[in-house]
Every structure is written in structure tokens, then in C-alpha cells.
Length: 559
Image (tube, rainbow, N blue to C red; front, top):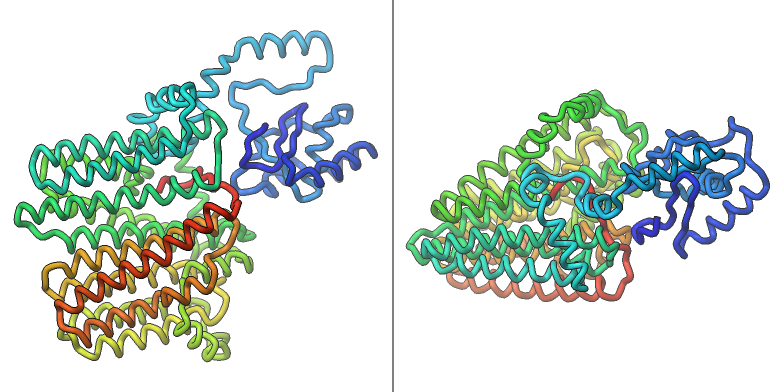
């Protein structure tokens, strides 16, 4: 009831509101004091659920008692557009007894509840992967309670998880069998701590803006730092796997952008149903299919377990090959399902969703200029034009980088064409059925072009420099996602201009490859990576430390 993530909450017989919802609470109290409305005018349990926020589940189906003020207040809050969060009670008891027998039954039901057991079970994420649910959470929640009793904060546990992962990456970088075994063990330990920090936050209700940002950011930093450690360790043994490491990072980041874009496009869409979604819901009622579907998408628990085990018993090359195959299958499976859902549903997307997709697109001044020039033309294009145009431009620049001679001016021409098609793709609001594909296509084009040109430079250091550049740019894109999720909007436009937008960076890398020799190209990539990292990290830290943005709580698809 006092969960700081939600401005208002209600259960049978009780309602509460945080300061930001006090005005709505006072209005609801005035309406409740005026007397209950006729039953026909009251919101039903279903309408309350439909109007609830995405993080809330309206599970209370008890009718509002005309003689219970909190119940009337909860109904009035819902009618006023400030629907309270209705926590899932599970084995907890919340009732308003009307006679002595009801009171006696209520007392017995309350006495039968083990409060500490409920609190521990509630600390575990409601929806998680198979490995996390059955191999980590059964004991990590007790570790979370141990931390809570010793006054440790979720942020301290998050930092410990990052430090452990960095030590694992350093162990992998030694290139020895002992180092690889130690790296695998430490990576699993880091993941245990990663689960513990969220469970500690839920157990002790210590949610914070900084904690949400650290948790989201450190997960990616840990994984990608570990990729770099594996690549360094392989190089010590004479095996260059930097291209595979960069490919794994590109694929994993593009997978996440698909997740983010699809969810943002459909977050508040109306008439948001489809036969495919209905089939998925029916499958969720069959227990074993739920776990199979969660495992094959390689969520973070399964992914890290696979990486840790393969690191300990095989070689970095095998680790990356298995990771690429698994992530490629998962990406194909999830993207195909979402495309099918999008084509079979009749959803009407809102201006907010279109703006979120435009922000995720990360268009720079070149694309914005072309978008303004083509706005009239774009209105006459068919509904599927934006993703088709984006795919055409992405294919042109990546294939040219791959097939043209290294240093060819044709790569620059293709990058200019990519900037033009990127502008045309976003020159009208992204409200089409498949417009959520536009941001991930842009990510694949930019990251893929950097990867290809660095690999074709064929000099020592080019791929590690490209790895650093993609990591810095990916950080900027993840930061954008979590700002949008926190309800604060995208980073300031000046930041996007400063780092050039996706099409500007793609053109810059193409120009560097054309104008500079391979050794100089490596130096230029390194300088560009450092510059982008300094700009985006400085702005990100400034924002999350000082903005007071709400904590992001993710109970959705495991990342």
C-alpha cells in the first residue's frame, strides 16, 4: 500500500495516496462524501483494470461497499482518471467484515498468514526466466533479506555485482584455463547479486531513480565488458575473436531495441488485440509452454548461464559462436511473432507512441533535414513505406561497406543515401503497423557498418576500437530507452546533435574509412569512441543524478 512506485493504491477497506496524488484523493473524498453513485454509473472491475497504469494489475473484484469510505474513494479515484494500483493480495487478507461471524473468519484468515514468507516471495520478480526462477531466486531472496538486516542498500549490491563482473572479465582476459573457469564462476556470482539487488529493493521498498538507472545501465556494462574480456583472453592465446565479440554485442543490442520499440509502439494503443496475441494468451495457460517460450528467447539468466558454463569448459570462439546462434534464433522468433501480431491487430497508436519511436530513432541533423524536405511526399506513401524505406537504406550502406573495396568512395555515397532514406522513413509520424521496426533497423545499419568497415580495415586494433565506439553509442541508446520508460522523454536535442545522430555517425565512419589509411582509421575510431562516450555518459550522469525522474520498475519481458 505504501509502495513508492505508485501514486495511489487500494485494497478492500483501505486506500492510500502519495503527495503527488493528494489532489485526486481530496477530490475523491469530496465525491465519496456526497454519497455513492447509482450502480450503473460506477466503473466495473474490468473498466478499472483497463484504465490502470501499465505497471498495475486491478485484481480486486469486490464491489464497492456503500458504507465503506475507502472503497468509495477508490471508485472515485478510478472515475477521476487516477486509478489506484491494486496489489495482488495472494495469501494476504483484505476484507471488511459486516457481522461477528465475518469478523471471526477474517481474524482466523489473518492469523493463518505467514507475513515474512509472503514478504520474501513478493521480493521475487513476478515474471522471470526459467533459470532465474528455479536456480537463482530460491536462495537469492534469502541473501536479499540478509542484506536488508545488515543495512545494505540495493545500490550497494548493484555496484558489487558490477565489480564482480568486471573481475570476471579480467579473469577471462588472462587467457588461461584457470582464468576462464574463475570467470565463469564469478559471472554466475555477479548474476546472483544482480537478482539480489532487485529483490532487496522489493523486500525493503527501497526504490530510487539512481538505483533504477544503475541497474539498467550496469547490466549492459557487465555483459559487454565480459565480451571484451573474452576477446582479450582469446587474443592472448592467438585467436582473434573481436569480430565475433562485436557481432554478439550488435545482435544483443538490436534485440533489445526490437523489444523496446514494440513495447513503446503498443504501450497505450487502443483496440490492441489480435488473433496471435489471443493464441499467446492461451498458450500461457499451459504451464510447460510458458517456460519453453521464456527459455528460447535467451533472457539474461539463461544467456549468462550459457556464457559462464561455456567459458569454463570451452574456448571464447565457441562461446561467441553459441551466443550468436542462440541470440539470432531468439531474435528471429520474437521478431516474427511481433510482426505477425502487428499485421493481424487493428490497433490505433497514439501521438505519445509515435513520439517515443521518433526518439528511439535517434535522428540527427541530416535525417531531420531530409525529413522536413520530404514531408509532403511521405504523406502520399503507403502504410508500410517507413520500415521498407529504412530497410532499403540500411541494406544499401551495409552491403556497400561489405562488397565495395575498402576505402572506396562508394561507401560514402551509400552512407549519404542512407541519411536520405532515414529522413524519408521518419518524415511522418510513426503510427503504422510495422513502424516500430524503424529504430532497430537504424541500429543494425549503424552498428553493422562500423563492424564491417573495422573488420575490412584488417589492422590490429581496428575491431577493438570499433567495439568501444559501438559500446559508447549503445550506451546512449539504452539511456534514451530508460528515460522514455521513466516518463521523462528522450535526451535533450542538443545531445543528439552533439553526437551526430545515427546517420551522421554512419557517414562519419564511412568518410574516415575512405579518407584515412587503415592505421589512421583505427586511431580515428578510438578518438571518436572516446569523444562519444565522454559526451553521452556525462549528460546521462547529470540527468539521472539531478532530475528526480521516477524509478523505472520493469516487470515485463526479462532483458
